[in-house]
Length: 541
Image (tube, rainbow, N blue to C red; front, side):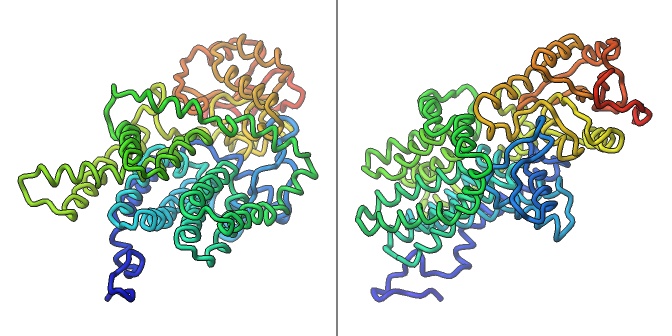
């Protein structure tokens, strides 16, 4: 039985959790299906989390002290300046359960992608004062490929919790500003602190969204003060982390990294691209891109500015598709139910009520969304420039080759690794990878750009001469070269390796084969300073 207020009108928030779960069920069930599809199609995680997992390992080795440097990711290692919360969490999970790092990066992100649907639904419910619109919004987000890409994949061990914290904090901000409920100041402060300690991009998303909620619902001195308590309070509570990092590396470690991935305002090109949507391939992802634009026009015409402003702001300031799709899902839900749903009701020969419209929308989105996103999740969709979605950076052959490297090379051995398997290589082998951009952003724009360019150059080499020239030109002298066979990716883009490079390396007097299996060849650089004289660990596996 529902509770009622003094006017005997049941409010949106006064009904039991069972009804909330019913409305949230389409999103949760869709999320569960896609998570299971992902696990079935990915025996190894998509994209990379080797650096993240190695950081957690270092934290555990140091007795949970904050490390200054993470070794093996390029010569001399990289500064540790990442927000540390989830690395500590992963370290604790490993120490308490003994779960394999690769398993953590497969399962933890997907579990959190289901958890963040709850605050998302609650935020939409209270923003719209409508359960149907909240249900449709959360369903759209649950099946949105750009949101899944960065949260269910390996790096989601950090990004998915950051999304959970930021969405929960934005919901707390809505309760604070829309309903003037001061009890939500403390939850907002705690959640903002957790976001600051998890991921910088999501911190910007939290702060920007929170500020827009203030402008929409409570443009008062009291509201401004409460927002300042949350914002400045969260930064101060995170001070034990950022003060220690600046003491070790200086403030430049933050300012330098800010320019390596677009920075604030980096999304302005993305905002411009919104007006040039390609309709050549009309599939679910295209509809998710087009409908927010059409819906935004409708909302502006109705003088309902919050959602269009939020959509444009996160696109322009952050420039990441996952945030644009999040805000766009709110707009799409409004457009589908208030415009298309009403039109359907008016023109249908049958008596179609509001419940029928909502049910039809949920069934249609769930069916089409799950089908399209399942294809995306399995990697069967050409996501960018013909490359597959959610590629696995490593496979069984890579793991076998890396196990060989750990057992059969000296701890001081250095490697150059072609392709994205390089991201996992130091974590799997505890050997130094001389070329790779991961973590180098904390050294500044110039070192990051150099490493990124060199990594792409090395990975595109198709002859021993190219390999030797590219490395010597940059003063890089590895002991071993690690080459993938067949298909592999470079920064997520698919490459097809022919036998030309392997044959060229075999014939070159500079390189000697020390390991080979179906997917990987490892060459020793003859005369390398740290090379092992004994290559008996090589051969076919």
